[in-house]
Image 1 (spheres, rainbow, N blue to C red):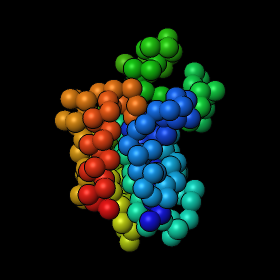
Image 2: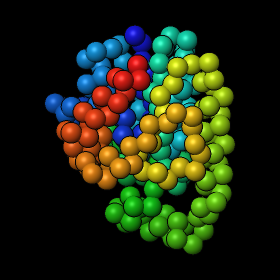
Image 3: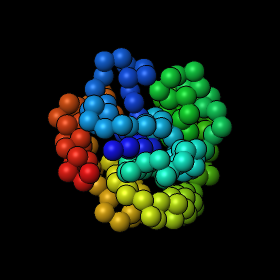
Image 4: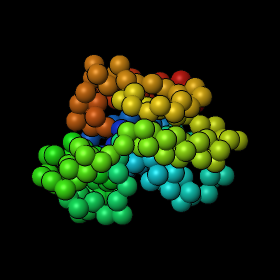
Length: 186
């Protein structure tokens, strides 16, 4: 079975930065032919671009880890552009604060419009739904921030709260539970 994984850090291959790490995508790759395009820190637009970058007909199943609607698209991240895991990151408030990107923090605090961000995120999600209308797709979310609801989405919000860790943001048990949830859908 040919599987395509797209999405954010919850689905990225953390072994590119942390060799030997074992997240659910790596577990899945032991059982199936997996192409993983997910990138840590990317927004929904970049997830859509991941899907457009390949011939979807080559894959039997597409797995998408959807991201926060509150990421700001950037062509090149001002901090993480040389980081192998986060090279294609977009901006998010917590990173801007952590790294002292004061102008970005000011933008988020004074000008960022949550309603607009939700609207644009929803439009991109609709484009993703339309693009994959005749494909076998497993959608997943982890934070509960998205207002857009994909059909049959795997919601790992409670799992994320209970099993936070260092690989794909989960501990070992959390990664195993995601792996098992996906295997049961295949």
